[in-house]
Image (cartoon, rainbow, N blue to C red; front, side, top):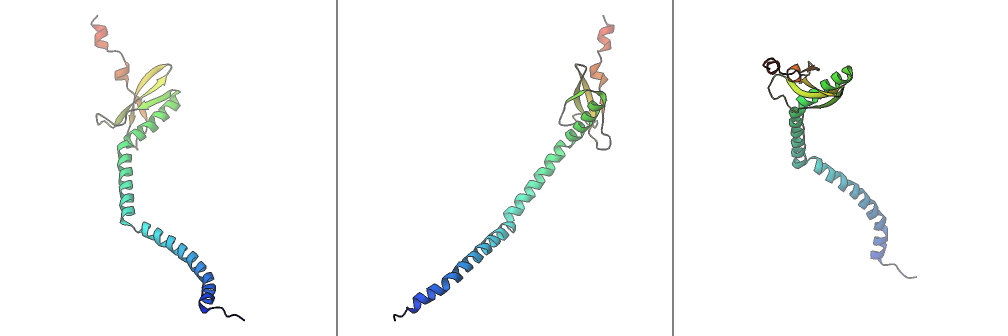
Length: 137
């Protein structure tokens, strides 16, 4: 009988173990790399910047979001079609200029930018004709 060299026997015996170890080490590598990514300062800094950007964006558009909610509420109660609101309160009176379409006419609105006073009022000052010009004729 011919003898099998010892090196060949060791290779045959260790091959299944290497396959098992390589699959386990592959899973461990994925866990380690995922753990490294989650523990990375770059990820934490990126998440912090994203959260800060989201907060700043929400605070910038907060008045617009509240005013649009009030405009849609006013439009649904009055049978009008909501058009659009300005982004910010430009004169610091806590009302944002909006507009709606009612009976084929554009109605200028002032919608509250406060969460505690959601709603709109009709801006008669710009909707009504200038009485001084009519009286001077």
